[in-house]
Amino acid sequence: MSKILVTEDEIHIQRLVKMLLEKSGHVVEVASSGEECLAKLTNESAPDLVILDIMMPGMDGMQVLQTIKASSKLQSIPVVMLTALAQENIVVQGIKLGAIDYIRKPFHPQEFVARIAKHLGAAKSAA
Amino acid sequence: MKLEYLQHFTTLEQESFATLMRHLGFGHAACYRITGEQAALIVGFDDPNKSWPVALSDTHHYTRKNLPGLVIGWRHIGVGKSPRSHWPKGTILYFPEQEQQTSKIFFAVQPAGTKRQKDGDLDGALQVVAARIGRWIDHNESRVFFNEASFDEHIRALNINVVAMIDHLLRTPAASIAGYASLLSMISHEDVSQIKDFVHVIEKQTSELMSGLEKLQVTLKSHVDGAKVQPATEVIDLGHVLSEMVTVAKLEAIQIVGVDAARELDLKFHYQSDFSCRVRGVPALIRWALWEVVKNAMVHARRGIVSIKLYQSDAMVVVDIEDDGQGVAAGSEELIFLKFYQDPSSQRGRRQSKGLGLGLYFARHLAEQHMGKLLLINRKGHGAMFRFIFPVAPAQESSLSEKKGA
Image (cartoon, each protein chain N blue to C red):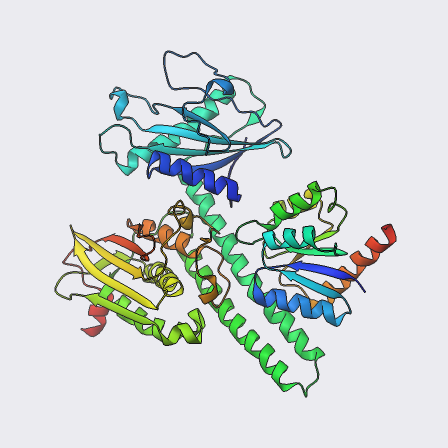
C-alpha cells in the first residue's frame, strides 16, 4: 500500500484522482495548491509519489517541482506531472526539472492507474 | 534568432512587473524571452554621451530594492528631432535564467515629460526597443540569439497563445467527464446517491466543455489570420445586450456563485435610453468581454450587490460594472489583467467552478480589439468597478436589433 500526494486545484479532478487511486488500494492525501503541497511534504511523512498539476494559481507546478528537486530531503520523491497543457516545451521542461512522467488531460482512468502503479513499483525497487 | 512571447510568469516576475508598471505609470509593455547559448545580455543607452557597448553593471538608473531582477533603464527611446523630454522612457527588467540558458526581459515604456503621448507613439517605442536590442547584440557579436520582431508578430503570437489557453479550458472538463464516467462503471448500481453525485459532476463539466468550445470558436473566428478584428463588423445596441445579459445572469447565478449567494444576488442595470449606446464590433466578442466582467462582479460581491450602468460620455459609450466586494488588493491592479493571475484576496469560495485567471485578460484584450478600453477603478474595501469604454457608432448606422424590429 503506497502513500500518494495529489496536488490539484481543480476540485473535480482532485476528487476523481483520489477516488481512482483509493480504489486501487493506495492511501491518498490531497493538496489544492503548490504552497499546500510543499507544506505537507515538509511537515508530514514523505509520500511514495507526488502527482502534481502544472497550472495552478500562485505557485505553479513547475515551481513546486523545482523546489522539491532542490531539496535534499525531498528530491528522491518521484513526481508525476498532470496537466492539460499540450505544448511539447512544457513536457520537456518538466522532465528536465526531474519529473518521471507526464500525464495529459483528459486521461483514460485505467491507463492512469496503471502508470502510477508502474512508477510506484519502480520506486520501491530502487529503494 | 528567435523571439518568444512569454506565456505565463512566475509570482516573482508578476510582482516585479507590477511594481515596474506602477513606477512607470500605465504604459505599454511587452515581455520576451531571448534564447541562446548564454544568459548574458548587453544593453546600451540611447545617449550620445555614452559609447557602446555598456556593460550590465553600469546600468542601474531605476534599480529599486523592491524590484528583484536587474533593472536597466534609459532615458529616451526613438530617433528624431523632437526634444528628448518628449520621448518615452523605457525600462528593461531582466531575469537571467542561467540553468536554462535563457533570459527574460520585460520592456515597459512610459509617456515622458508633460507632453501627451498617443498610443501609436508608445507602440512605436516598443518596436524601436526590440529593434535596437537586436542591433546592439548583433553589433557586439554576442552569442545571445535574438530576433527583431514587429509588434504585429507579437500580437500574432499572443493570439496563438490564446487558442492554446482555450485548449486547456477544454481538456480539464473532458478529463472529468471521462473519469467520472469510468467511475460510474466501477461502483455498485445500488449506490444511488453516488451515482447521482457522479452524474451531476458529468453534467456540470459538460456545460464547462460547451462553454470552452464556444470561446474557442469565437476566438478562432476573430483570429483567422492572426490580425485584429475584421472591419466588417456590426452595430450593436449595448442597452439590448446588457438587458439580456442581466436576465441570463440571474438565471445562471446558481451555477456561477452557488445556491446561497444566488439567493442574495441583487443585480441592477441602469441606463437611459435617450442617448446612443451603439457600438461597432463583433457581437459575440463584445458579449464575451462584458460577460466575463459581470461574472467576476457576481463572484466578488460580498452582499450580492452588482450594479451595471450604461451611459455616454464625451462621444464614448461607457459601461460601469460595480460590485460591493473587497476590491482588488493593492499592487494587483494591473496583475489581474495578466493571464492566469488570480487575486489572492478574491473570494474563491463563491466561485462554483475553477477559473483559470483568464476572464479579465480576455475582457481587456477583446475591448482593445474593438478600439475600446477596460479599466479598473479600485476602491479598496468598497468593491471594484470595471469600466468599459467604446467609441460610439455613427448615428446613421442602425443596430442589428433595430433592423430585426423593422
